[in-house]
Image (tube, rainbow, N blue to C red; front, side, top):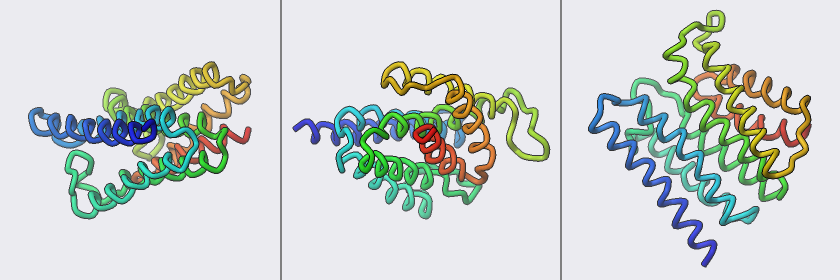
Length: 213
């Protein structure tokens, strides 16, 4: 019953987030980017539900694997319009679900990986999700790239805050040096990820780096 409730709550929560995003898209002036980022940010919080109900069992993999299929279908057919960039052909939403699935698999194999799974996906959700909105206010770009200083700093700050909170809750024994490595790594991994690839590089590699240092 506990596991079944986890499935019901996780799927219901994600569907609710998509529903709210569709309302934002339909009844506001935000036709694409804001609804997408709303989904990007709030779907990330589904990790808390899954971590609580599924622990490190096989069930942790099933939900993100389901949405990996759904997101791919949506990317190819625009099935869930609030989730897609209609003007660009970048599979960022597919990468998002893929990262969730890979990190869930690593957690199933290494049960103590759970906090690092959360660190990766929440930095992607909150850091990368809100980065373009912050960048739109402070538009100074890094060199000739489309990345901005403000966006990169926000991602690094997000990684730091999440790392501190998780360290306190999960007793991860992070040192100052480890915090520095996590923060710098988050900025580099987001910076090198182009065309939605930061949804791969940032969560997966940041989680692995934090786990191994």
